[in-house]
Image 1 (cartoon, rainbow, N blue to C red):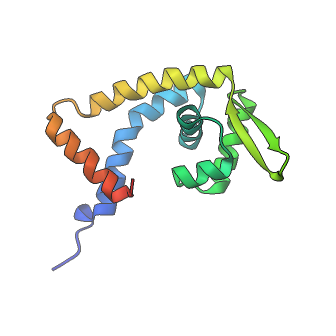
Image 2: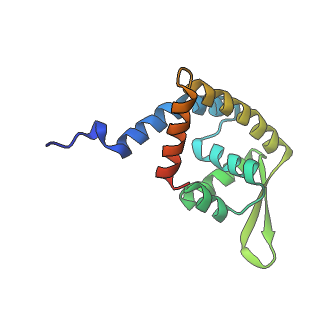
Length: 140
């Protein structure tokens, strides 16, 4: 039996993720000039509140260098601020600014609309199965 890449689950998941996120990626890039990692950092701060870059690295499973670049870009656009922690001078707490919270609100609405569009024509039962299986695979 020969190996078929098109049936290899990691390949299928990657292809599905790219296809599913492409239109939404165009939205946040066109509106705010954001890259994918920047959107994910913004999302985590908007969803979970103030946290460190290390917290985002662990929660979002993004390499620390990419998070660092995203934080710098979001700070330059005035979407977030950094504040040092007295107990640990190497650690900073990241917080969304009013502008960052506004962008988060706009993009969250767009994300919900995009998500619904992806599942258009899919039964509620099938959508629930897809979400459940993907959470299992991701360990969420």
